[in-house]
Picture 1 (cartoon, helix red, strand yellow):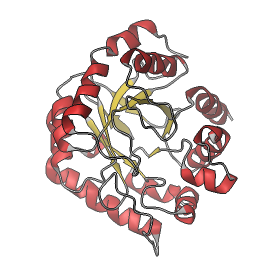
Picture 2 (cartoon, helix red, strand yellow; picture 1 turned 120 degrees about the vertical axis):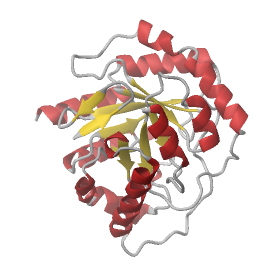
Picture 3 (cartoon, one colour; picture 1 turned 30 degrees about the vertical axis):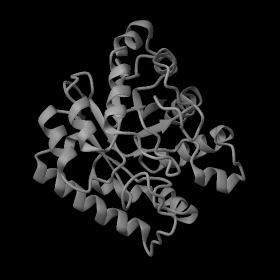
Picture 4 (cartoon, helix red, strand yellow; picture 1 turned 45 degrees about the horizontal axis):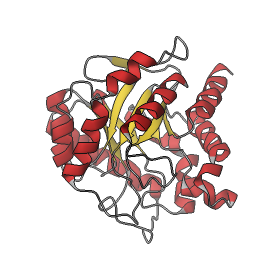
Length: 286
């Protein structure tokens, strides 16, 4: 399987990839966001040196109990970070020979009005879209620029809680969803080798739904696309372990990484890059 980016590609099977989270906002659920660009750059550099193959930069929290920032403010935050991106690469060194270097620069955003502006920067290689691709606009933008696009499973608009969503067959519904979205990408001219799939842990899913997704994640291998699983500090971990503080959920995060990796996932989005990298490297070795 090949994952095509702007000017390079990554082939699987290979050691799975770690995506380190960089929150350029002040309301991250995990408490690790910052609007100070020097601090955001330091976090990105630390993630890169800890082994991150991808740096996933978000300028708006996905929390549903926070209002969305304006398009103008989200773009401003992204551009402030992009203006310092070269500082990350110049100051960091790869963890080992298998790390993707330089790390893939991913922007975590879903509004086409934002994507259209930030995708102009040729260093942006990946759009991490939590919006569920309700129409083809983001796919068209990525097709035109050569960027890769993540499609996440969810229902309804982002930034709105969907706590009453019920699934009779969450995996069957997810498979039908991805069939539809991949066809939408085809219509938009975005080749499938530029698409990554995300099962959307915690998005429009309750505790048992999330656990079902982890158990049967291997069913998504039928699409022959990389699977990115956002395992880090999720609500479902807190529910199972009785941990209300997200920063206490890193051991549970590693457990979810191991379960997902055993079922064919290739990319893991995390806050604690060092712990995830060590777990992933050991699992891959054995």
